[in-house]
Length: 94
Image: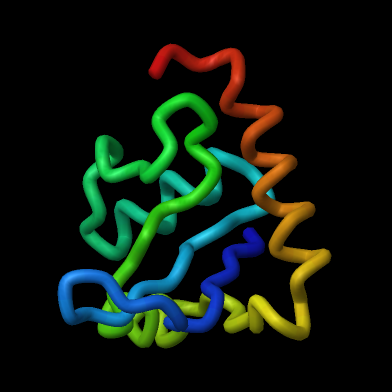
């Protein structure tokens, strides 16, 4: 299972946020469940490509085995993982 979490780089409502990503949607759902994130928390319901997570959840994800990646240094990897998940999610009902 390969799950990634990127840098907590953007601010929203006073909190730092990051993205939780995985190579497959099943991996993403399973890992998000371990973090206690409900399935309905997908940022993009049509693709189900990633979850937004707080910086605190990012640290917990890393402790559970997620691979930390950088949106600046690993931009191609981030794009590829999201695109793959979007392709998988297109057949799912939003």
